[in-house]
Length: 458
Ligand code: 5AD
Ligand code: SF4
Image (cartoon, rainbow, N blue to C red; front, side):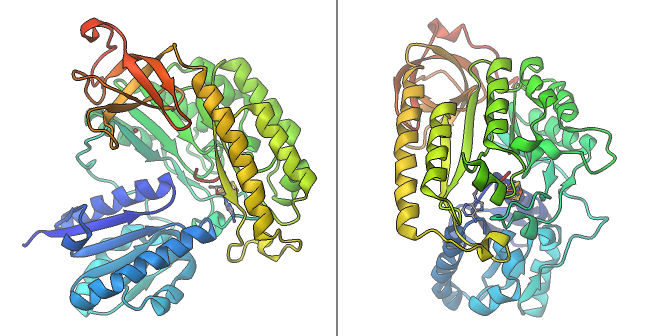
């Protein structure tokens, strides 16, 4: 059989990065191999994100670019999966008739049969049906040959929180946790293939195991992952502040492999706005959790998500957010301007904030955070950090790139180091998005082992 090529465009969060890998795994038995070149592909898949209006616009503009390609090569199969497909379903194929397959978040496992269906019947297919209760959450089978040292592993899908601005519970469904044994097996396989850092992912990992009878909650799962031999570093994302228990915070002290970084979306520094967002915590409670994190693991890096211009956000609310940002001293922030999403309660809230005010608040906060991040990074100059080498830097190929334990990107020159090594690197210069370093120690005698090894919501 002639080998065919698939090109996947992944938009959005880490969940989608993981799902795209699952698509490749599912398509391998149909003889599809990945290609990074769009014009060489027989099958083009878009794994989409609908979290904000901007993300959705990106999908349609990309699809627009494919119209001419499909006209010239009608045998190409174009599939759109992920959250926009789940949300839009038949509307998507009406708006973009050159699509062959629209497959929602629950239809991922059915992708091979949808591709076969298009080939056999030469007609469009739409699958936005819910997941069957007996279907597995993740694809089983051999781990794809991995050429990187870090990997994401999904531990749960969906969300039960219904923050009033968020589309996730509608497009990803209710919380479902994977069985611990399945997760552990997947990590073991990845480690055998050279992965040394794992990021456990889910919309709200803190709620792992709360709803089912797997007999293992998130802190317990972390302990079991920690026991995996050869695994060097563990990270997780995303944590909902309301579900961040003391036991979980204590894990940062108990578990050596747990990297000292937490992504803890606050969304707003005003308790009034937090209530209208249905976040389930107050500003004070958030600050208490942050204080405990600092107490348990001094030096822990904390990053966050903030939405500016939520309906009804007054000047005083925004100032409370600015104040919280300064008080916490986040290592970095993901900032978003509120946008209405289909069917979410906030879309019907009155007192929408004009775009000009949103833009003003956005740039004020961005400037404050840029300065804070730079200060934090500058404070590291002269210190030595443990760095996991990920490979050559994309921007300058004579440099290597890696991450510190606190998840900061660091670039440095070292002709001997290889991906998978953990090295002590001295920080010589700090920028707002990265650090510049110099490896410590002659001949790298100080290397601590080789290849013993890489928001969303909440
Ligand atoms: N508008 C703007 N930002 C949003 N987010 C989620 N929904 C919206 C929305 N409707 C942001 C939140 C979340 C991050 C992934 O996206 O900050 O944590
Ligand atoms: Fe769930 Fe996070 Fe969306 Fe809230 S913001 S509904 S916690 S995914």
